[in-house]
Image (tube, rainbow, N blue to C red; front, side):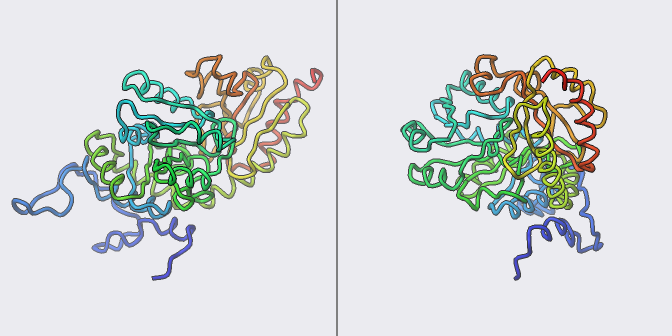
Length: 370
């Protein structure tokens, strides 16, 4: 059978899934229970927490797109991370990217305090130094790439060589790039996480998380934990993600095109001290020269929304210091480079010229101060 391109697989997800009717869109199976014809006789579906046909379609689809063996649809991105952390036990050690989403930091600190996990934060800029931190207790490396909010890229392939050498799991949060731009499992990762609320859903209308894994033992453990915890995604929300995935490649291309234009535009603005953009994807961050400018700038925006999320078709600007990274202590934030001048920009799919105009009129008020 010919392996179709990613773009085609995205569009065709769910098509031909209902041979009885020939429906193009897959059915939403809202049923919580399924009939047994007798003792030990099951259709493969018994109770929706354990398995649901709509969820199965999504999970198989995302596993295929990420080149994994099995997918798991969770009730949020944080539920997806919690599912993965459930693989570990008291005393285990994880080495985690220093620049990381504040919600992930908060959950990791909870596990450190409540369950005696050892969490070591590392920039992953010097892998020889990082390797020296690996001990007998180390069980996994957990990274975002690009990182949130400083957009630092981490070499997955090089890390995978280290995790193979030391028999560790490599866990990658791929929310920012999606399988359209990066497929960590193909580079050697064992587990991929998505906050599917973001680009995969793409329309700011569904809260969801996805986990994709390889390896029989890991997949079986995740399946058991997924069922036991019950943090599964509802059938309707699964259907929303299936719908979102169909247009993902088109949206990502436009997000990226716009982000590249906006990064160049911001680099020429006197009020902007620094632009941080890895060159791909729809996410960038930038710093204003003065932290006192942040609030008036945000209030002056007319098209771009000041909100705490990313990856939707609408453009959002987020202030990490008081929103996404507020739970990281101030001293720790400053150490990590998350200062009060930093703004994170999820560039939407509006016309780039309209976005430039909005940014320009909001930044003009500071021209005499630079």
